Amino acid sequence: MKTLLPALAAVALLGGCASGGHCVGELDYQKAYSLPAVSVADVKMPSSSAALVIPPPPAQIVPYGSTKDDPKKPGRKVTECLDTPPRLPTLTPQPQPVTEPAKS
Image (tube, rainbow, N blue to C red; front, side):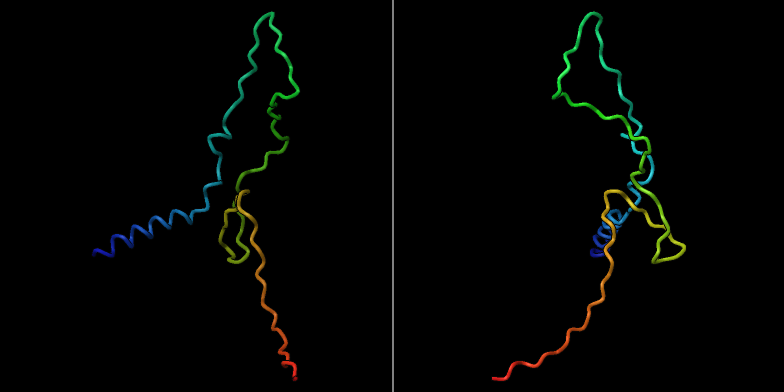
């Protein structure tokens, strides 16, 4: 019983790390809106070339994450996030020819 509780706690904690759905759906920062610039009557704001300018939103919004069919397991879905690197192809090792040692 003493080892069962820590083992269950470890499984529960590690299971939370395997979740891949953190990037699907709309997040709070994506719902944020911009406030209009502050303007005061009869006051001109200086324009600076060094000022930071927030760019306008893109014409086509790219989702942060998407759910696609898993090519390795037909019928199952896999979550792909923009911050996850693509999977590398698996390479099969090529057998190396055996060479005889040089005779001296």
